[in-house]
Length: 189
Image (cartoon, rainbow, N blue to C red; front, side, top):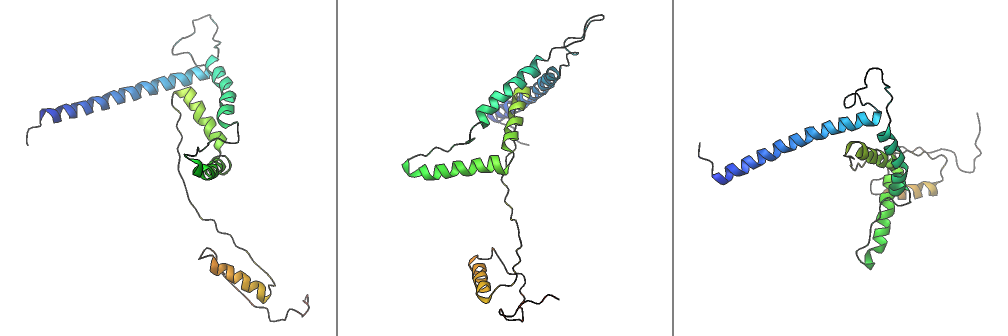
């Protein structure tokens, strides 16, 4: 095995040190988050055990503060029609920016539970120092079926033309012809 250069050794040791510090920091953060949850729930036994013969009543100031802040913060972040706004770079981008703004707001607030996502994210950040949101885009096709009865030949031709122009987005699954002419009355049997 060849000798490691001094610069490679220093780089490896610096990386190991950074990993160790990150692990210590993560462990410290986990402990602080557990303490914050205890304070939120009014559980002070770990830090301030009640003395014998004394009251065990605990003030829930942490929970009261967080719950008191939430309506104001939600009003700031979700209280308008636009949760997100795209700014145009130049005058030629104004229409595109407006369309992007409308689309993203519709997807976030209408197609997804945007209000609840923001609420959970902000409350987690206040309570545990970190608010995390998982974001992804999922495309799926939704299939729907339509059934048409008693179409005239012209109506069927228009429908068939629409299917042809859809480039495979639509298809005719079944077609049956009625033997009676359109002038014949329908006979209920």
